[in-house]
Image (cartoon, rainbow, N blue to C red; front, side, top):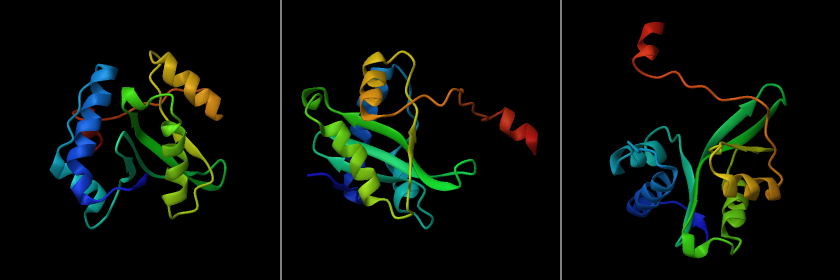
Length: 145
């Protein structure tokens, strides 16, 4: 059963996030404390849905071009043994069912090296927006102040 995350899900979320990052050959700096604060603190920034074999973490988005609210899926993970079962599509659908701000579109990022994920998202109806996302972080971030 897919359901919204609760504070007791933080250890399972971290396990899934570590598995996801290992597949992407990346790193993760989130801890139980930072995830708990982000999802359940006084100003929640992160929302999520979870299943025994997967999860999706997301947050509100807004497009001034569309003039519409949306949601951004930050992380989508399905355990290897559950891939091909429809769980990923169900997790994506659950983000829309459980969001509360009237999202009318979904955006997400996909690694250019992950052909399997790219094919899956295309089958779901996702299309490329035609531009690259950029990030400004420390130490360059401090140069703005």
